[in-house]
Image (cartoon, rainbow, N blue to C red; front, side, top):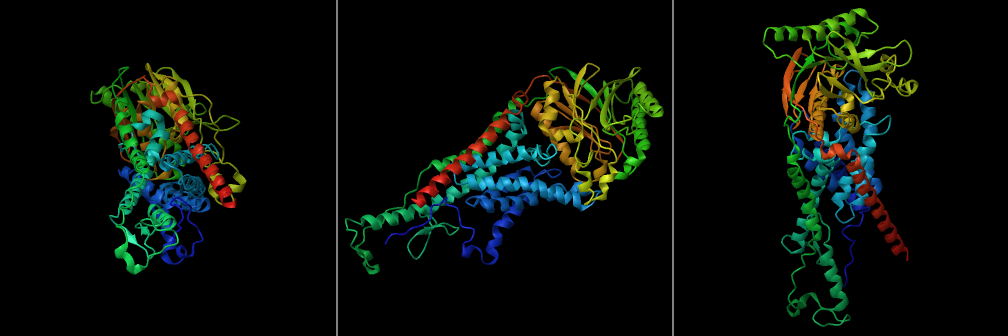
Length: 591
């Protein structure tokens, strides 16, 4: 008799009764949540970057062969497992509602990715398409809504990983793609190896009908096809009408060894693992901290805040005084020969929330500190014009000259620096009214000429956006600074997550990155992504370091959004191919 089974790549029915009973129905949802949790654990402050690989492997097992609707649900669970703990810091001072809302909305993008991965998982070389779909999801999340929220890009968890050099090749999209491809490839490689072992009879089980099954209980199609072909053509010359009884096995011809099957899928799975690793190793020459344009001695001032949380804003003068005092102390250290003279000084975002243009006393003490340290200083301030929106501004302050240039933050933070749909949001949280006056965005790229050094400016939240950092380098920046204010988020993991972004940006653009933060962690990062100096949290400090200056451009900087666009095209092509195949299959069934 012939035996009929479903093809190995056919979608499994979501309504199958044997899979809807008992604890087994929770297996894949639990695996989806676990894969998201592993992704979270791969992010700083933990140095567990490699956990991203089993996370994607487990996600691949969870989604492969699922229907689109199930893929969305499983992907959404993975997103919750990943983003809820990752973004916990957003509720540090305003309660759980904003945190849960942000995680829930952001997880919708991961749900859409799950749908896409489930759809493309039936294609040949599906790990390539699945990894591209992940990047498609990240690209969408980085742009919508309200200008996007790219926090949690897989690349930002890889500052300590072996894949980091890929950032210099194609930026965060290529780095994230390489990690996802390797993880999905690991699962597919294991699946192919187990399938080949089952086909060769190394570890098969036999059903009552004589079909080999793999460890998951799935009949092996090669064996089933052989059984079907035997029934059609007969054994040893028998006609289709002849038959054998169970007791006539002594008359049967010796069974041939089951075929191993084609090697193509196994080779493709191995390449999915090896190519990202090999590519990262091949990209190592792109990483250099050689001082192409000499060096600069930079001072990063961390003045600290009077207390943690949102209420630090009510102590604006104390915050300003802290940074003035630390700068004066640095000047004294330089005068005494205990510290080198800095070429320029960097203050954090919001180091002077008092508008120095509107407050003569604030202007006077800033100007005095800059004169004493005798170096151009970047001041983070809030500018409050008589009408219109506030501006989150970095001011270039020259000794003896005062303010000579400004940079207005271009990507202001929704629900932090301005409140979209304020009347609606107020229904869920009264904290929206702490932002009494919205900030407006600037429209010019920030590059200051500080004592002959071109310094690119990306204020705090902007470090998460590829374009906001890349623009400064293409406009001539020889190094980058990311002035930040993390006091609102207390001692949460947020500051370490953001610091990892700056490390990735250093490698992506081959530039030194200096991160002055009001309350820590401030750091000096070399172009190879290593941290050469850092402060503690909620302590006053000053870092003075010599950093290499560079002007060459990495492939990632030169190509801009092109690598991301190509990966998005691969994802769309995979989704389209899968749709065509599904349409043909439906027409064949109805014929």
